[in-house]
Length: 328
Image (cartoon, rainbow, N blue to C red; front, side, top):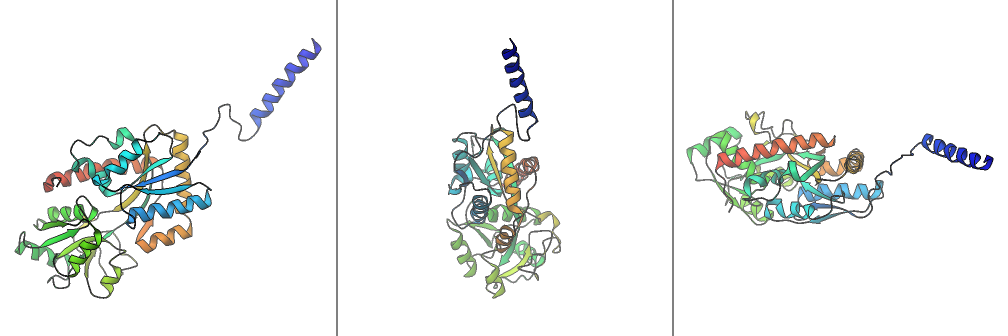
């Protein structure tokens, strides 16, 4: 009897010590990651969302000792990449690298099989950048106001280019037309370099384009920059006014990148991903790499990104409807 009581007391004492030990949980904590983490990018290599994903993947691999890779699944106005994530387990090892076309897809793709509120979990908004409105130097417009006047004087005569249907260049161009009451023809290209090439040779008049590939073209006079689509000037083009300064504050448009997981991923895993990416975004090497793209790190909680996605889906749904954009 005495030995049994001693054994009973010892077991209880051991349990009490364990419960008081830091880090002990009565329930096993979620082990994550247990394998390779994939950032599934809906773009080809070398595009801003792809590059942003790779910068973060590299930092996570180094600082967190995780194995993180980027897989490109272009096509279908980002739906191929989204569906790829949805076909993998809801364990946080597959993340959708999202940007503006991702939230426009529900309005552009008939019969889309998923919805962001029902099928995805927000993780984090990683970056924000802004496009620049550029014209071929032969276009007689040195400001946004002059371009608007020119377009109104020649409705449907001038063209604007993009790197494809449903890309930011296309969507922002359509929003520009709506809010300025102008008419111009959209010319989509299968590849981004073709769109730039036909802007340089004068085939097309203007384009809303991400900054990285055109900064040198602007500085050498091969393209003329009229405005940056952000609320403040950018260091790479300090002499170029913002769209707000140009008199069109409603045309401020963010070109962002963020990550979502399949619905059903545990809150612990979402929190762990969010915390790790937030830490990565604070690293000087990451901030420097972003700056070269004309991008800024954002970060923040999952819910904030979820609210952005929700509002952006509605915003681009209205733009697509008002502009009468049809899938081609």
